[in-house]
Length: 337
Image (cartoon, rainbow, N blue to C red; front, top):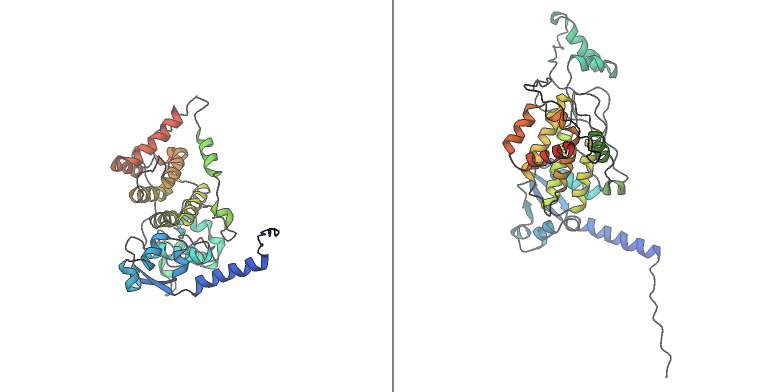
């Protein structure tokens, strides 16, 4: 009888694996572009790149749907900025969040006077009589948002600000007394809830070396509404199109930003806008868990003292009358039971 030939499995060399990876990457970027139209803006993305991230979008481009036959898709349930962040992430592995808007009043002008000549000029134009101003200068409305003179980090605004609105510190109509902590040692205190929120484990962010830590806010004149909403909107988009890695990255980015955000009473509106959007655009929890709502419920748990002083927040819970109020009450009972 002849000897049996032993079967050995050849291991691919690192060079072979590298070439295979390079070929795969090349195939992605040499695939034909597919056009997505969002709010009238056309985005051209490599079809293979989109397909490897999202099965629903893959079926839209390559299946029997009308979009595949036409060669383009019109996405109506997403805004241009959010889809742009998806395109940025698909190509780079990270995305640029929304912008921090800085509202300058008299106090913050004095504080920022040393940050550049433009700030000095604007401060001077306010402090001096109008008739002494040069023809090219005009009094600046203290409530008008302006960009600071020095270059700003990527997280901060680098384009024209939104339409101005009156900046003021919200007056509390009917203050609510602080939650009394339970003497029960098993009930988490505010500090314990905050500590556990700050140290939530991130997975996707740790795998990307390109994601810088978000900057903490320095005062109540810095509005983070667009920053918060950019993460939440991308989370909702990723959930709709089954892009799990992007969904978790958006969730972790939002958590990281909330963890370094100081909730001044003048900035509760930023959180209210976030809550309003999330509870209007996320579904009921599956198996008792909805990651984004769970994250915000945890946040409300340690910031409820400040939030409850805001009449708009109380009105939002009354108007919601359901999931938001229920989640808030869970945290109240956890604090006092």
